[in-house]
Image (cartoon, rainbow, N blue to C red):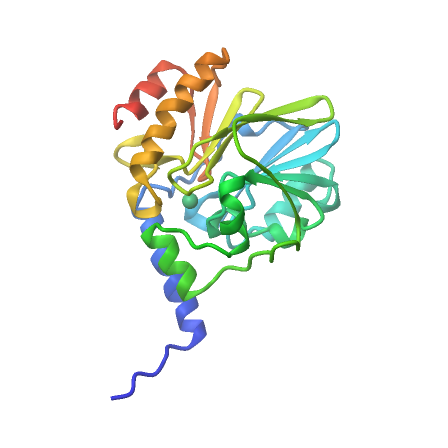
Length: 265
Ligand SMILES: [Zn+2]
């Protein structure tokens, strides 16, 4: 018996359906905008991909506009609209900070391919599609329907290999390595807000917790990374007022948050 390959259009919809359903089951379907991220005229946030709420956060600095992550399907139009609320356009975006390179966080890269893309060194091959994730869901989805990714050299990448500080004019962003969800997952502290990407998941029933195994290369390492992140922040005398996931869920920082998340450790 000959098994005919499914038409590409069918695969596309099956892939989107599979990933969307799993994201909804994981509790990533929050429908509210994260309050601490709306700080006009200096910052706006965009949620993309319907119920998956893949976040793009835009901040104006003295040296240009920075984006944290690049959303998923449907990102293009709302990104331009929200940038217009800041009084800027795509050309004003100078830098992109990627928490990681799963498909639901990189969609809008062709719109800002002129920018500098910052990410952890261990995430670069994944970003370019040279290496595939080990986690089940993103690996299967990428094999069924590879997302559009920049080839090596197609965009400027500046990678960091440890916790460091990025300077944008008069503004600074601290970076923290939090491997586990992906090999090069990173968190960014901008002002009072810590963007943790998918290093923290947010379930409907359990609230914030370490990255979920189904989507993560190494869930045990992800838990360990959050444990040490708490210690690293403390050592620097930093206590973020807000901690936001890449699916637009924000929690107030402080001991109550960390105690809850690290209870899974
Ligand atoms: Zn992810």
